[in-house]
Image (cartoon, rainbow, N blue to C red; front, side):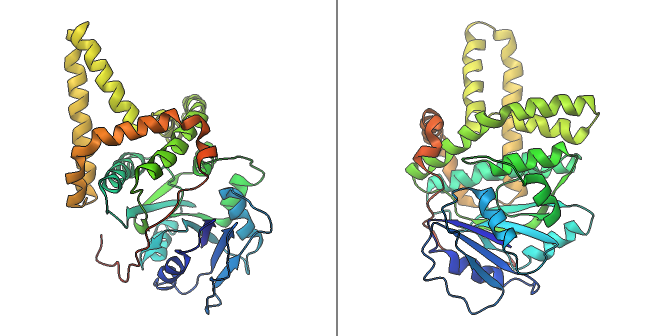
Length: 347
């Protein structure tokens, strides 16, 4: 397992402890502490390897390859998580179940480990929606699950082949990786029982910086979706074609704003088209609440939905700052450490 940390290591002991508690002894943990003080990272277990690059990397792909180049032994498979993630005790077992079906790339589930603010709850609501449509549904209709940046696993050989020599800056390595995989006709599986607990953004400033990076990434790589769509049509590839539609879809808040704008236009100028827009809105709401039901959303998430307008305004501010997103921040600052002692029943 590769754990990437950038400038922050205060949560690493909890992360490592959660991994070592897993029902899978045959593992090795590589913590890549990029631009970090590692003096406090002392572990008595030989399966934990602390790596501190000599120069600042500030890049996920470089951090991953730094770990791969320092493997203590050959590893058939690798899984990647962030420095604030905690893993379920059966995480590796559930991943292996999917690998045993013949898949070489697998995305698990990232669940919230903190719902301590309305922003955190809405952040998780959005994650659940995307988990349902971009992973659960895509995979079950025969395409690929989109990658989430952590809680994902690959055959080591496949990962190296997909990203070796690739150069990119800023956020979005998972977007590059999934594009490379699906373009090569590799299907990404969805392991809905392989659980990783992720810190949700709980403050406005964090949200703006994080979403600015994500929006910047979408605009940067949206043309890949167009390219993949034409390739899917030309090669009669269902996997590519369906996945390309997801790649081209704008962020959810932009779709909501676009729907409201079109609604006003229809009321003023094209009332005969309003029924179609209303039906589309109803379908969206049904899918959204269906996603919350399928993944057993916490009651706090439902209560937070009343603050969606404020959440959208914050993302509009993020849109304004998207162009300089990678100057504002390189990574989200993590503040919540919650050690999960036993997660067997939290599903």
